[in-house]
Structures are given as structure tokens and as C-alpha cells.
Image (cartoon, rainbow, N blue to C red; front, top):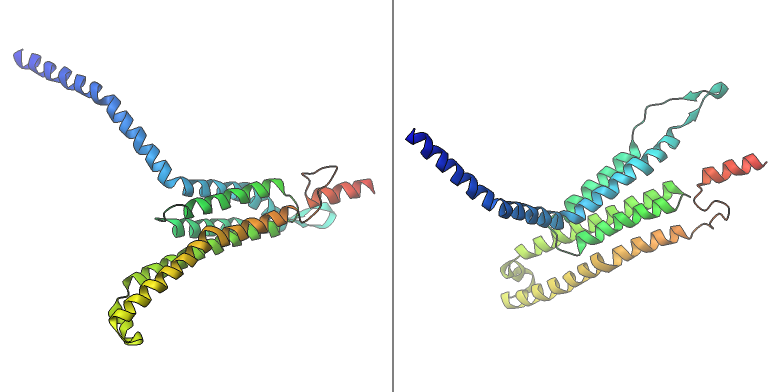
Length: 234
């Protein structure tokens, strides 16, 4: 009987300590989740944007590309290779790998590029195939630029003055050349990753928005919708 009472006493003491510490555990878990989301927010935004493109735009575009009218109004079905979806997933994987471990603002710039591409696709319904290709190729080029810059910085960081001395002449001169060259090239890389490539991407998409005049009857209509309306009028 005494052992049972002692056990129950220890049990309730432990339960009380757990309940007293439970708010701290919940707060720590919430803060950990918040910090994790903050660290991975650019990648999550990119993944969400890629999912929208894959499920909405790619699927619709791929279905139209696979459409083959048959005889007597019958539709001829052919295997769907899911090329558009595969390209989007490939570009997404390339971008996520390239921005992994990068400090701001590069991951956020890429996330905004993805998000802006989705907004343009939802607004512009003319030349969807060309627009989709420009979005994917633009993000892929930016990802490759990020990878190339990271490889360059890692490679130059491993070079010593003694290795350059054989080409330049002395260790002191090599150290000065390495410092100057690395600083200049790093500045060029930052300008390219922060401004040049993203601005070129955004300018290209803005040009696509205003490339064709907007329909005064149905501004959100695609080329297929406009042709269908024209045929009905005829």
C-alpha cells in the first residue's frame, strides 16, 4: 500500500511538472516552426508557384498540344509525355539546389521571379507557350548563374598565393592580385545576381504583357477564345 501511494505521489508530481513546462515546450515548438519557415520561405514560395504552374498552366497547355481531331468528330488519343510538367519540375529542382544555403537576397529574388511568373501567366492568356518558355528559361538561367558564381567563389577561396606566384612572380604580388581580382569579380557577380539578371527577367515578362493589344470585349480571353468568338460571328 505504501509503495502504491508513493508511486501515485511521484506520478502526480511528474504530471504537474510536465503541465507546468508544457507552455514552454509549445512556445519553443512554435518558435522553431516559425524560424524554420522563415529560413525556408523562399524555397516554399518557389515550390508553391511551380505547383500552380504545373497543375494549371502546364496541364492545360499540354492538353491542347496533345489534342488531335479524328475522323467524324472523334478525338484521337495519343500518349501524354508530360513534357511541360517535367520542364517545370526540372527548373524547380535546379533552382532549389542552386539557392540552398545562399544568404539573402538571392533566394528571395528567385522566389519573387517564380511568383511574378505565376501572376503574369494568370493575367496574360495570349502566347502562353512562349510566355511559359520565357519564364522557365529565365529562372533556369538565373539558377545557373547562381551555381556558377558559387563555384567561382569556392574555387578562388581555395587558391593560395603560392599557387599564383608561379604565374605572377612573387608571393606578395600574387596575394595583392588575388585580393583585387576576387573583390572586383565578386562585385560584378553581386551586381549580376541582385540586379542585372532579375531586371532582365522582369523586363522580358513586362514586355510580354504589353506585346499584344488587350481585347476590349473580353480582356482575359486567350487566342483560342478570340478565334472561337470570331468564327461564331462569321
